[in-house]
Length: 118
Image (cartoon, rainbow, N blue to C red):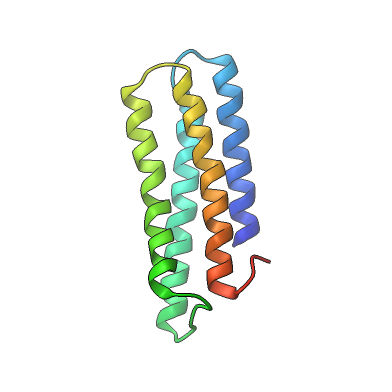
């Protein structure tokens, strides 16, 4: 799951950086890349919930694990709302930070879950 998330986040960052250079308003492709990150996080959360329901413990604190997931799930939604309100080229750049931050958060989730990220 971590490698899939890494690819999705990296593509989102590249798309958003490209749209920052090309467009003067929020680009549909940048918004769709946020939706891809959100979809990945929903799948990750469902997978984690099923895994824990089947009795698999996380290596770290459970509250911290689910706190990271909840925060990561809210981040693309909040930035999307902001991008819709702020109709400048810079909203594309701000959307790119979602990919970077979610990558770091998923890396940390893997550390909490398994004890290491890979």
